[in-house]
Image 1: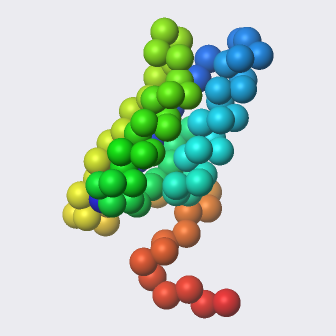
Image 2: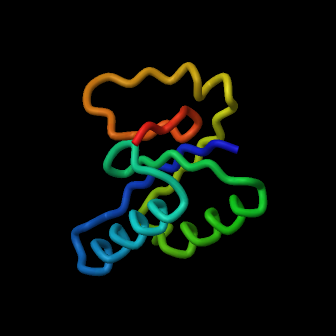
Length: 96
């Protein structure tokens, strides 16, 4: 399944900045950054539970926000990107 993970973490405190770094590192370990606080992740159902639980443990529900969008294949293919795009398409052939 394809996911779009978006988060907003308050950074006015040292703890908030720490959570922001933890969120980024956690998301990077499962997928790739599409924008500063937006990640595209492809996982199976079992791995999704691990990702979701890990991210929910990091955020402070009083001050932070976490959104996980499920993208079906059709929606993903219809995505339009304008401007800088550092996302690698792992489904297409990779030429080195």
